[in-house]
Image 1 (cartoon, rainbow over the protein chains, first blue to last red):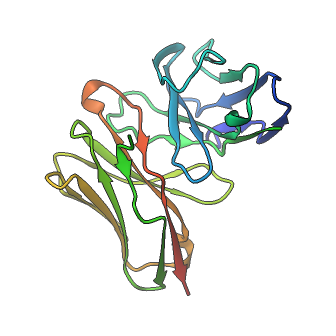
Image 2: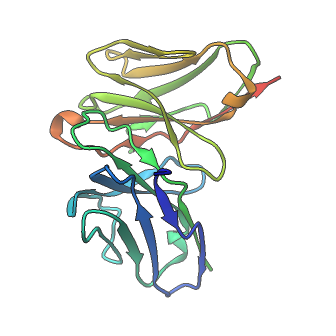
Length: 115
Length: 114
């Protein structure tokens, strides 16, 4: 296993279009997280899954955003009716079970540009 | 309201010298702190962490110090190497509440000059 994989690496979309990103975590990791990073800022938490259950959700995650992890393996993050303010790096991370420390492994991210 | 602050956007250090990166936090509920390193076009990589019950943690060239009363932590890199040039993020979590959500600072860009 080569780590957390995210697809695509880059996405350019027109305002108003829908986009979907995929994250494949490390196979034995049951916890999966989505973060968003804009220029000059640190990553901001969006949502967290333990297996298939979405346990935490930031208020940053407006109703245009939805995340799923249907079988507790890969996850998708969909943004509907994209806006220019959605332009950012979307980072996925995962961590193993029964580890008290939240030291995740991050993927390389999907860079979204909304034009 | 920014709960984790890294007030130095950038830092330049000569190779072989000590790099000290600082981080302040405002939420006294935070009980676990981490440092991540990020190279361009890559995701952040975990570097070192410290629990609030400790005041120091070492891993090779990297040492993190925590001053709970001042709500301040620092990362020391000794000796600094050119490969350490990256953006360093401080992050905090409240795992005592069962949350694994991390709150990050804005980062400090470290440049190690050969």
